[in-house]
Image (cartoon, rainbow, N blue to C red):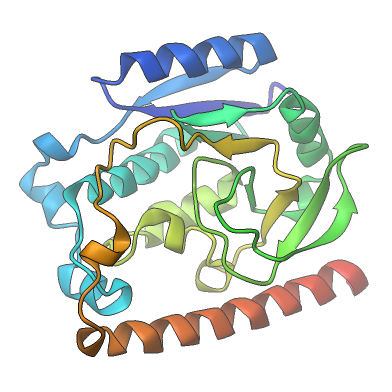
Length: 251
């Protein structure tokens, strides 16, 4: 799989995480590079200007965290690093992702079926209500999602998707994992592997450091725009997923 390369997003101060995932990648035989994560403690004025505070409040119903901005910009930087490389496909990991033994076989299947996707989630926080469209190997299938599936700890992109993200992600008005699967926004084929070969390690303390959502959420009277946005977004998601499913099934 010389055409495929992995990137690990890792803060300079998170050396234990890097050691853990680098050992796992070596065991799986996957070529990879480290991407120094954007540290929220040292944001530049230009990086701070990439945050659309008003848009975030309106769409997400809470105050943004600088650590979220750092995460968002880190994924954006990965796209640029990938586009500057000779690789055709990038596997992107946050350093707290747990990688299954079946990951190499899944990646081989994705390369073999490269015309059927632009972005593929390898992990997810919500199910996404996946509807399989093709078999990747004996145990995994590529699926279209009809509902929300957050999380961006492990996923694959091709160069078309990376170019669309590099061009269209900024400014930030939502957390990264709420926007990277909006295939209708970027005109991309977004898929998920089911069952997922990777999982987000919720046993490892997050570097975002966010308080519980109920403590961050605005009062419901300040969240009316958020409710409107989410209803519209989920309607678009379902319509997009249904369209993608019909195209995958019937061409």
